[in-house]
Length: 112
Length: 309
Image 1: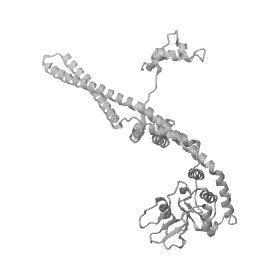
Image 2 (image 1 turned 180 degrees about the vertical axis):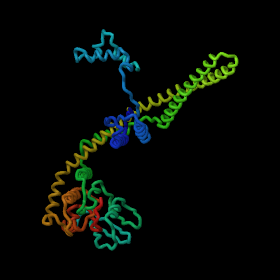
Image 3 (image 1 turned 90 degrees about the vertical axis):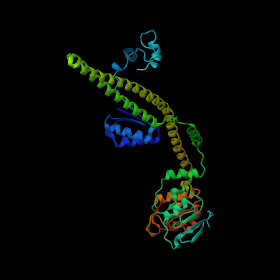
Image 4 (image 1 turned 180 degrees about the horizontal axis):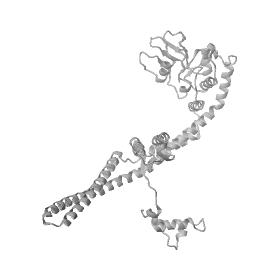
């Protein structure tokens, strides 16, 4: 999908109008951002917004996140185990200490 | 006589009218209310074929009540907020708004040239597709070289050499294209990183602008609330002045609730620029002088019957 994020009042207003008039191309709207369908028309709307508001519009192309392909096994397993931890109040740092689960800071510093 | 300051109206035919109340009913020229309103808003000088009004320039309240006529429409809340502003009503939001405006002025969004970024995107895209094309060509040529080698006969030697030369040329081009692709990608990544950093500032600016707008809205509400009691008093006075003529003014026009609102707003607003009053409205309020006293504003009476805003 095409993610559009706006950074000025005018750009946000234009996005709002675009979303109102092209519902078929808008997958989701979140305040000053929207996800457009990945069609040529979605690209057309995105290009229009960028042409009109330049740096006040951020355009990204999103794709589904496959945790089995896009995340290391250790990261995925740590997340699953942490989600099912016994005590809901344990912070991740304490949960991971003394286990094979990766350190939060190490994960922060590692690009996917 | 009214205490309102005198104004001077000069019509295109050269005739002049002066006083706190300018009555154009006797004027020969056919002057539309819109022309008078424009002259009030523009000030001096105007074009020779237009009327000129010598008076202080109107405040923001004026636009709500510039033509008091039976068909008038008024955004009461906005008009009362403008009255509050004109009366100098201070609100706690004013200081906050000042602070937000100052933060906005101090904020400078780092500039990322969008033309540079566009050029970098175009270059990266071109380098990417060139590399892909050459990669396919190298694969094809490699296949051809292998096929000719497998052919094995002496007479094919020339063909093998020719295919090998083409492959070597394509491989060299691919290597160049790959280098260009890496350079283009690095340049684009660097510019995108700068754009990303600039977005934090842009986001901050947007938040401040939204905050300023909310404060303005709150300030308008507070100002409108502050003058609301005075408005209600004035409205009661307007209604009792119109009493006995309830509903119908001269010529069968109706004194609508909106007209009463507008008259009350004009009465409580400090008005230095003249307002245009339709003759039947002035009559209903006891004549031009009584109207000027009631509204405490200079007036222009008469001229046409189209309501202007």
